[in-house]
Image (cartoon, rainbow, N blue to C red; front, side, top):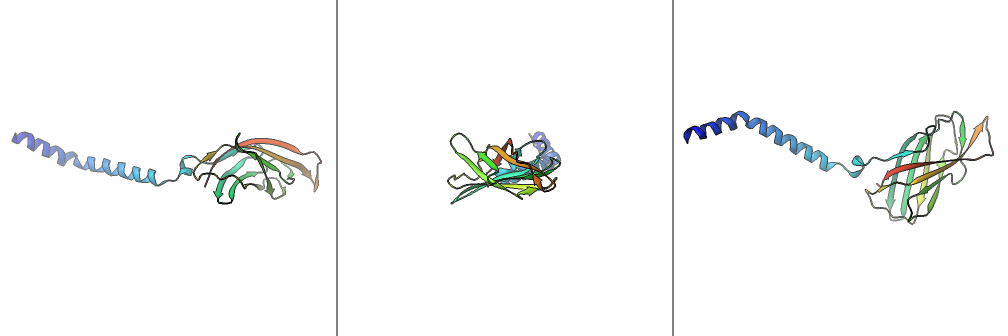
Length: 162
């Protein structure tokens, strides 16, 4: 009996430090994982077209309604002009189409564009993930003259509500 107790004691003193380190590591990982918000696990993203690469997409909600914002860069090689209600967003089958405007109204090549869509009757839950479809209207400009033809492109987004 005395030999087994001594062996157990020697085992614990020899390998006990490794058990403590493993327990501390697991505790630190648990604390770090539990302290991160929903947006860390479900990042917002969007896709419009290869020539209009998306930078960011997000949504926010308050007592008055919700707002969705999509940011992209003009890489068409020429200036773009956005008419009123240039962006249309459809959240899903249960919701109607919502329109919004893009700023600046005339975007030069490689300039960042921010499109904002207000949804006054939509109250979204914070942390919810949306997958709206997008439709973007624009005209091409050259030497301050814009074409009368309005292009229409579509895209998708994954938005996490903040």
